[in-house]
Length: 135
Image 1 (cartoon, rainbow, N blue to C red):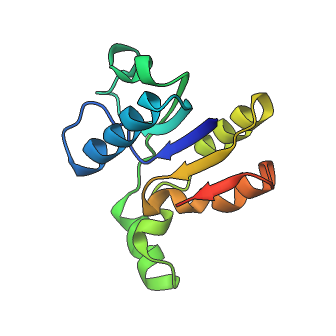
Image 2: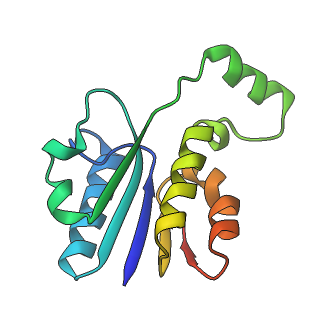
């Protein structure tokens, strides 16, 4: 079974709760024999090729985490009805990466980890309408 995991941050190194959780999920799924593709935001301190993720995932694609100035956050908070976290990682570079991934592969399920990644639910549904979405 082919799974795509979308994470708000590269789950290695495991220095905070989200990374610990997501690394544990990846480790468990890989151990069960699933074929994993990981698409994640990253900062410059994380190098996926130097991590144990390469032994667990068939493919790892990273996108630089977007900068989000305080002014943009305040504008969204006060001028829209959207929660701040919902738009935090909504970025064209991630949408482009997902389009490339789906142009090359299809998946049995897509796992969205974190509220920040929910912004990509409609795009994933449009790219592969029959895929099982897990959030």
